[in-house]
Image 1 (cartoon, rainbow, N blue to C red):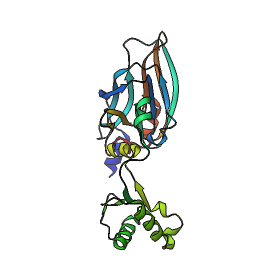
Image 2 (tube, rainbow, N blue to C red):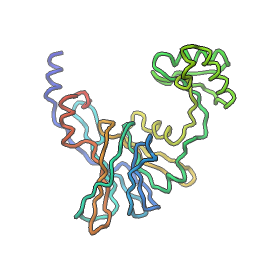
Image 3 (cartoon, rainbow, N blue to C red):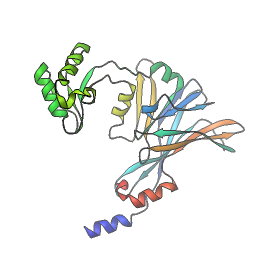
Image 4 (tube, helix red, strand yellow):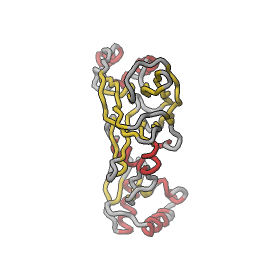
Length: 261
C-alpha cells in the first residue's frame, strides 16, 4: 500500500496528442456552444463561414490509464491570428459541452421526444418503487443502473396519472412523487447524455432526414466555467477554442491524483 501511494505522489508526466473528432456542418453563420442542460443560454459565435468544419482536440492520455479532453478548437479558415477575443464563457454542470449550428438548434432541438419511458430513481428505493408499480399495474420492469429502473412498455398519460396517484398513497413518496417516478421521452438532451455515456466525445444526429447534428465533448475534469476564445485575422474569424485543462489545472492533479486514472 505504501509503495502504491508513493507512486501516486510522483506521477509520470502525461503526453498530449492531437485528434480530429469529427466535423460540424454550419449554414446559419452562427455557432452555439453550451452545456446541454443550459442550451438556452449558449455562447453565440458569429461570423462562422458556411460548410463543414473540423473539430480539433488535444487529448491527454495519462500514464496511469485515464484519458481526458484538454482542449477543443473549430478551425474555419487558414491563416495566423493577429487578434484574440474572449467571446463568452460556458457554465458546465453536466461535464459535457455541445456545439451546433443555430439553425439546427431552432429547427431540430426537441424538448419533448417521441417516447414515453417510465423510470424510477434514487439510489436506495428505485427497485422497490419499480416492483410496487409493476405489481400494482402488471408492468414489466428492469434495472438500468444503481440509480434507475425503467419499465419495458411505454407509459401512457392515463397510466402516468394512475401511477402518480398510487405513489401518493405511500407517506414516504407522497410529498414529491415526481422525484421517484418520471416519464422520459428521449428528447435531444436525453439523447446527448445517452450518446456520451462512457465516452469522451460523440456526434448526435438530431434529424435523420436532413442529417442535422451536433457534436458533444466531455469537458476535461468535468464541471466548471470555461472561456470561449475567438481567433481573428484582419477582423475575420479563423477559429474558436475552449481550453478545459491548462496550467491552472496542474494544482488539481497534485491534490487529486486519482483524476489521472
